[in-house]
Image (tube, rainbow, N blue to C red; front, side):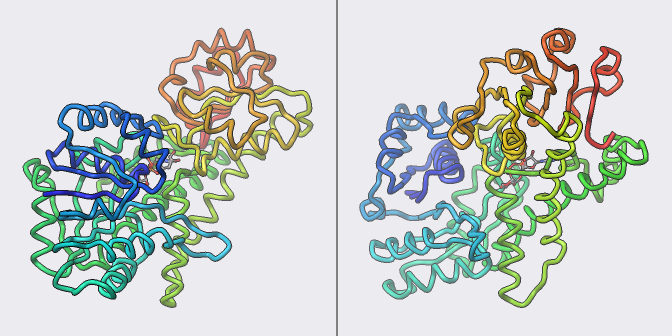
Length: 434
Ligand code: UDX
């Protein structure tokens, strides 16, 4: 079986590397020639734990993984082509930018040689896979291809594990022939008792958005509950823990935060409600989650600024964590970046540290003073903000930090410290929801 993966972003590169790990001959395509040249040297354009090892193993040892910038040549004896290009949300048009998907569909149509299964793995609004089918059918007889929807559920920072041990695999199919081919390539997972759910193409497309929007809803929900907990002196961690013990609710994605970020939740929530609107359906809860989350980050930033003192001129503020979550260098829609901007706009000097994301952050906020360690970032700080729950921040020597900071004040936006423990050290502690 020869697989072609079109688009070498988080989804495409992890998918290609993992299919090579399954033992399939996998060719990744990207029109960005610089990226292709870097990848041929087993250098990933972003940090993802374990990805570099997989790349070098399958590029240099098994030679099952290769790269090209030419989709037309890649289509030679391709059995399955995965579309894994970006589908960003266009705020101005209030819709998803599907131009890359359409462009790839056209190029596939011009180069299909033999029967090929064309798979949309990018997160696409309902109806997009059928649109891909129409584009290809305008040039290729329908007996020569089938389209399938096969959404991914990879989390950045644990993407390889999520691919290798998924809770389920979803395949939206139109016939048994393409279903059997998809079940065949995921057979290595089946040995691990992974349920492979086949359904219609539209159901598959909706499953992805509904899953992500529901996870985002859980986060926005507990974040709002945490605001009430603060007012009535309750502890949101106790509340979340007790809620999660109800197996109808589940404990995951009930950790409070300054708001969810990343390249998926913010985009998928907006796309889901705007796509539904096209069919005259008002996903009011999903819309409310989006506005609640956007407002939350701004509220958290204003609370911090108010507590430090509205005139931040000349004040030094320490920001620990820039990425939207730990174990990634991705800062897209990161709450930490939004908070950094607010602080700098108010005149503060922001001294920051993040194990992986400082280069990316500096590109978007040049005024950030990136330090070599968490301790250096805490020096002379009027306040210390823990914005991302990297393991590196979980056991800091707080007594040492208290000595070097100018004001002993900690804003723990991920509740990684015990409130009483910090107060006993003589440090002013502000957690979330407690
Ligand atoms: C998400 C989905 O989890 C994944 O299934 C989908 O394929 C892609 O989008 P990702 O965005 O990579 O994955 O990371 P995730 O771990 O879901 O975190 C997203 C955001 O939610 C982060 O900003 C994180 O800090 C936040 N979050 C997560 C919370 O605020 N609270 C939680 O309990 C969990």
